[in-house]
Amino acid sequence: MAVCNVVIAGAGIAGIEGLLRLQRLAGDRVRVTVLSPADEFVYRPLAVLEPFSRDSLRRYPLERLIAPTGAGHVRDRLVRVDPGFALVLTSSGRELHYDALLVALGAGESNPYPHAALFTDRNGGETFTSILGDLESGRANSLAFVVPNCSVWPLPLYELALLTAHRARRRATAARLTFVTAEPRPLTAFGQAAGDAIERLLDSAGIHLRAGVVADVPGPGRLRLDDGELHADRIVTLPRIIGPAVPGLPAGTDSFTPIDDYCRVPGTEGRVFAAGDATDSPAKHGGLGAQQADTAAAGIAHLAGAAPPPEPLMPVIRSTLLTGDKPLYLLAQLVGGLDWSSEVREQPPWPAEEKVVAEELGPYLAALPAGLASRP
Ligand SMILES: Cc1cc2nc3c(=O)[nH]c(=O)nc-3n(C[C@H](O)[C@H](O)[C@H](O)COP(=O)(O)OP(=O)(O)OC[C@H]3O[C@@H](n4cnc5c(N)ncnc54)[C@H](O)[C@@H]3O)c2cc1C
Image (cartoon, rainbow, N blue to C red):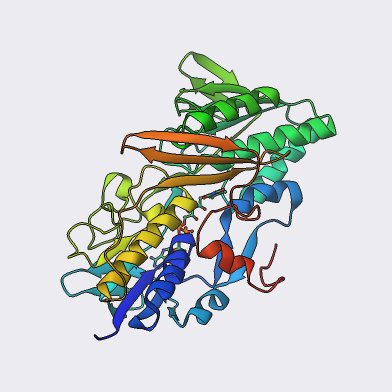
């Protein structure tokens, strides 16, 4: 059988996880090209530690992750997919033919509240460091964390609130902290046990919780809630995340790419797969994106004649919640296609250094030479 040409568009958590799983399942039955304009792989989840320790965001040279797998790296941007001709078109005018394509482009970001400070891994360190400085110098006495009512990565804002309260306690900073979320309960997508644990943590950290509240920020320091206005000297929020709206592929709500249980994109003759934040999965989470990438890789390996038919995706959310004290480990699993069963552990069920639980990427990064990851 001929070698199967695979294009992986995107080199974040989902793209690299998919690459590693595919190499393991299909080896030389596939010829893989990774298409990404990036030079670095940024381990985004550690961004929450940046304002607190200044040396936490890890960046790896992408070449050092891709080259050992034997895949090629084209530094370019996907601008269109033509499923009829099985082609990817790039921003520099290249045409890449594929037998199978994995779309792992991540999501775009926008600010849901122009009057609030936005925490992302791109600016989070700087913006939030200056907010901490304001609280500690007395220029600000109150801070509200606001999870907006749209697609977001909610976990980092809870971590930021708990880390802030922990530091305020240690430095005896008098700050009034409020957490407002549109979710009915904290981290709803992570299940009941996670919600209970976070409510307890917020309470014992002295953070006032308002859950199930859709907030508006009509001006600096002003929070309009269902039952009136609240003032906070500083307000910090998360980006609204939006799908990549890939021309040539279907797009669902907010331009996310729809996928089926095998992470295939409908209407593409079973040859286009998608994984990670780009997809229309209701929870946006690196560990979940990695599982989708593993499912997609199994499907591609099957197309290449190297593996049996894949199993459908059984999503499990596995997350480490940083608290300032000992982290908590959150697990949630979809039961019967409807309900999430969840549990919270105090001991790490996965290697403690893995903030994103990804079966291939985790051990791969851990085995890289120490010092390869640069820190800001
Ligand atoms: C502050 C923060 C903390 C987080 N904490 C956690 C956590 O603790 N646990 C967890 O599991 N998740 C966490 N997440 C979420 C997690 O980081 C994301 O879900 C994950 O990065 C998504 O991976 P991805 O591969 O889909 O997208 P990305 O990581 O965004 O990667 C997208 C890739 O696509 C490339 N690309 C973009 N456009 C194009 C194009 N047109 N053509 C080709 N390539 C393109 C980019 O260069 C990049 O390489 C956190 C996120 C943030 C921001």
